[in-house]
Image (cartoon, rainbow, N blue to C red):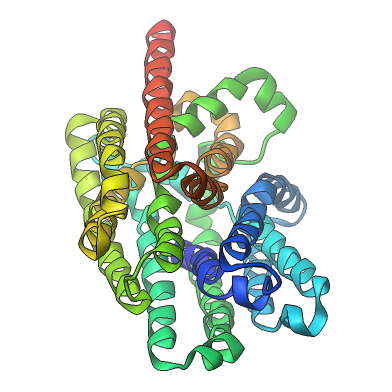
Length: 407
């Protein structure tokens, strides 16, 4: 949880800054809407390059070991995030400042891909038969915890600094903090990863990098089924965390500091919902849990335009209900169909499945949702979430049919 929370913290710091900071600091030559859209384009870069980071990390692991790979990845993640705190503004260096921001964002994506340690798969394989849902959600708790810390830092700085001070130097503090947090997370994870017990368990289950070409030739369909099986949750992820902040900032009268506080409460609700998701999944099954929540997300999406356009009360309800659904669904989104992979493909297959799910479901969510909502109205959010829910239900149905054939 410590390791995962540090990774999510780095990404959420960037996501929040894409709305509150980057349009003014890096894109002052366009209006606030265009500046936010440009920032969201850079936001997607990390998810585009993440699979490359995964592949590069596996090569490092083969040659130098798992601990070296993890050390390189987390130092790159912390350095890329802290490096953003040192960047000059557009007024100081022009387009070079934007290029450096993009480079740091790419560094974040490569690092996150390279930090894959196989722990979700190992947990799923070692968990008791009737407790797999519970163990699956443990690592996922890092998401609401990372968002909670990132949002709290920005809420404090936003509420206690003048606008000039916040945009001049205040926004840089969360990015500096990321490096210290990543160092702590690195040592916490190394205490687990370098133990003989951990290595022995990974080797026993053949959880080692495989030939990627062979993986896609023999079981590439499982990568896509796994990615789409969790798409409803991944589609909801940034529609609840990043997109609403941009909409409120641009088109609502709600005070940003108060809205950040509501999101902090939402993160707490998501963290509380994740253990519940584990209990539910252990009772009715993880795949049925994901399917049920996909239906609930689809129903929620129908009310999204009404709530987001419903003033402070409606927006707050959207956030709080959305975070509960996110906690319940995201808690079970890791490796739901990992068992489909042959043992020697499971390590790489699970990593690339997660990369693809992030790329398809979450990478462009803030950009697409904001651009389409401005052009066609908030009903675009409904269609975006509905598409994710439909993909999840179809993928689960296909997976069930394939499982029946194998049996």
